[in-house]
Amino acid sequence: MPPFPVIELRTARTSDHPWVFRKMIARADPRARPGDRVRVLDRSGAEIGQALFNPRSQIALRMLTDRPSPPLEDTWLAGRLAAADSLRRKTLGLEAVTDAYRVVYSEADGLSGLVVDRLGGSLSVELFSLGMQAWLPGILAGLKALYPGFPIHVRLDKRSAELEGMSPLPAAAAPRPSEVREHGLAFEADLGEGHKTGFFCDQRDNRQALLPFVKGRRVLDAFCHTGAFGIFAAAKGGAAAVTSVDLDEKALAIAQRNAKRNGAEVAFQQADMFDFLRGAAGAGRKWEVIVLDPAKFARGEKGVESALRSYEDINRLALGVLEPGGILLTCSCSGAVSEEAFGAAVHRAALQAGRRLQVLMWRGAAPDHPVALHCPETAYLKALFCRAD
Image (cartoon, rainbow, N blue to C red; front, side):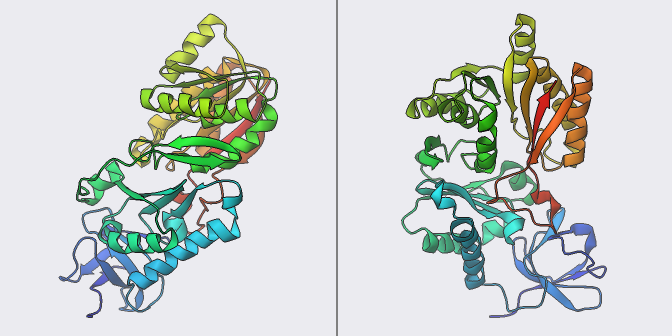
């Protein structure tokens, strides 16, 4: 087959970050189409690797290799998928504790724009780039070889689809919910309607890390989604009482079913979390452990300032209903918000609430979400375990 089209950069490539922005492109081969795999040359004409090309996006090139190599075909893709899977199943041994884990984590696994989760007996694929959508047949073939017989549900990240100019996926029957297991507990994962790809695998180790703090204590699981933190506290941690709150009615219905299947006593309430905490403070309600795990407050750099205000507000409100000596686990999954900025927002919240915080642990996502040092954006999750005086 003919070689891939060529894209020339304006400068030498001095970074190994996988994103190359549109303004850095000097010339594009007329044969190159959005979503194509292309060869990339620096300004000297030397080939520096291959990438997924999309001139419609600010991220015009998503680098897949950093050196000249034969054209990247389905065999190369299958090898990358197999390497990612081997990390989870062989190196990390995740199947000993769960059948819900991230199989492919985009840039961290050298496959920019692709996320794959195993959720019980199903796979959930989420596409973030036009190039990965164009390569979907190869992706599906590689995954079927690794997980024969598994149903595969494919979805587009809505914001990425708009930015990348991705085509709607063909109509397909709604996937059936999948049951997943984690450390002996069972949960329903909604592959079709749930946040992310249906279950928050990234918080697996943080759910375990919270358990020593909850025995005999009253726990509030804020932004509980499908209830995992609260159910772990009730079913495995020996919490005295657990209250779980979320605004999403569908997620709460799943959470209630999850509590029942695990024999966990949890009081669920549908409410806006900001309003709930204000009402709780007015009523004099208190908890000894509070988990704050909101959905992403910032979708990108433009939303960071607003997100930091929201993190500050929600942490201040939570500290207002946390008993002295209580534990606050506060989280941010906004990749655009740095660890330093998030910590500063929590500190401001403590000052406003008249509380002092001792940080017990700074944690991130579980290791099936590895951090790529050449792509700091992969370190998106921040989980701060604190004791409040």
